[in-house]
Length: 388
Image 1 (tube, rainbow, N blue to C red):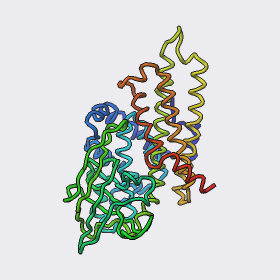
Image 2 (image 1 turned 180 degrees about the vertical axis):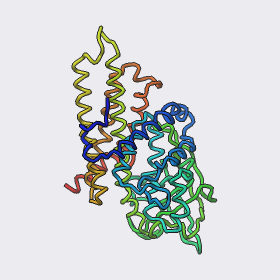
Image 3 (image 1 turned 60 degrees about the vertical axis):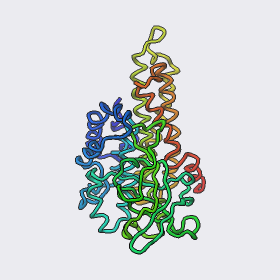
Image 4 (image 1 turned 90 degrees about the vertical axis):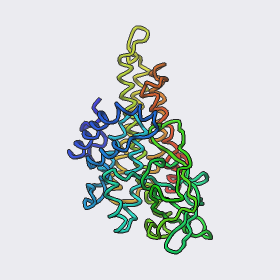
């Protein structure tokens, strides 16, 4: 099925350049990802040369300034890239890229000093410096105000102590943007700051690589900081304003995860439609069963509705308009929907859908986190309700 025709709900937003970008990303996924993803799942990470290939194509800095090697384009174009990338059946690959482009490096792009941008951003855009963002702790996820990790000023240095949990790209990241509390007496959102920590800094180590249900080719870590000394100019953005930087970037992160959910749902529906049209049962293709056709038809309708909202959210971002309510609602909707879609698609694959060789089985495992990561559905719906 051609998902990108003029009848699509998002077509009002799409330009010929967007279509060319989609086709470029689709070719990359088909040739550089799908043949090798199973091997990456076994080894537990995406080879960094694959990310450098994306960087060489100009795909890791779509919204970043041209003077640093980026494309200088808008959030809508970034969404086109994200959705096309998310048609891959390997969610671990997709999230490895999206953490770098949409969740971690924006902290540098938005808050970096001229010196920090010159030092790091060109390498980030080329895929030579892979990034992670370390906010989450065992007792602080969406509740950023609960961050406990400390940063203490000591002359020309900051000294970091604490740990971070569930950090995507954390095992192999070259740069980690770390949230820490810079005033032990301040409460809540006050006195949180962001810091740049380079791989290999004394006192900074990977506590352990985490073994996950899904996203198997994404490296995920517990990070430990023990008297980790970093230069005073490693503060990213304004001191004690880290909470607001994190809140600002949540919208970009949540839109990216919603796009991932929509991309996975579209892929699952395509795979399943093809499967039930050829799978014989009781003397006829499963597609001949009215109940199956109508169930898939309803999931197609729901996915296209979520997709229309997704493109509207990207348009609002491009216009610089407030869209916390819309993005939060989209994140909750898309995360819940993709799980409904992949569960049903697995059911219609029968026993084959339970086999590890089946992409549907992998999509089921990879989709589960999309109601949790980047803001659980319950947290997202509270954000919507507060603005009703």
